Picture 1 (spheres, rainbow, N blue to C red):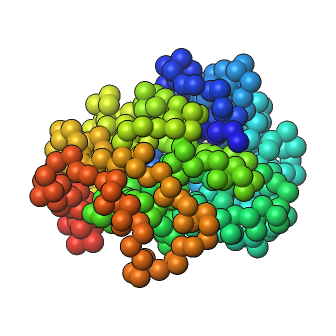
Picture 2 (picture 1 turned 90 degrees about the horizontal axis):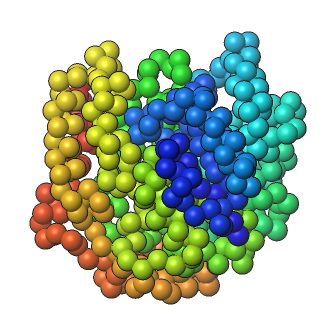
Length: 402
């Protein structure tokens, strides 16, 4: 099994990453025609010239480049004269610069690629929720060369993975290091939100306050056992998916600094990590915009829009949240230490199909959490930090920002 890893388009990227087990690099501009799976605010801006340079360097190193066209909603513009022509123009640019793969969410876009761009391989996004063999066969029937199976539904469901593997001939792939909620019901809704924040010309003008992320993070960080129930795959457990016929393991995030990406890629390349499992997922300190101090600059461009929000109230909220950045443990790992080595054997229950799928009647994950999870600060301090974090969700529900 080979890795599929993100690029952040940073100058030090190719110097610091171990590509020995990497088959494909993926990325995109922080805003473009179709939009993508991460809010524009979280990503450093990238120019077309940089993308071309990274595609060329990727090829020099014997790897493929995957350009993401994975926005899940294009406002129905794909079925308009102007929208269709703009899609073809975007695909012409992608094709002409030598991109090998495009990741798509819209079925019409997949069919356009397969009909008009035979040089491009098509991968179906994780965001369309391929969580059973029927959906897998449908997308393969449209021409998909690779399917990203639904990590929130299937990363612990080896029975369904086997069914899909037997049913399709195309490649299948899943994501390893996201801690999205187990069987999250909001995957596509969250994807729609991200698509519109990155879609050029959308009425929101790239504005976005992420209710979905706040909702998910609040649940996960308030009860660390939920992290173990999540879609996360440890480096040591990759072989389980390899044995089931999963072709590639995808890693995130393209918004991270190269140093943090290097740590993550190294762990999954070596299939082993000793230390805090939280170092392998997202976190404030890992993001480029936080590391370089560009948070407020990005915020001014994408968030401080008087037509969308009360900018004075938003400024107050962001000022509060910036306090969390000053708290080292929360900034780096949300106050949590999850001893990765103490999770050896955790996946045995799921791989042997003995998970009852009823968390109310089972303590398996909670028992492992008691053994592996500890707090880096007093629990009361963590609760105070979480209350501040929860504010970002409550002000949306209460309407305080509007």
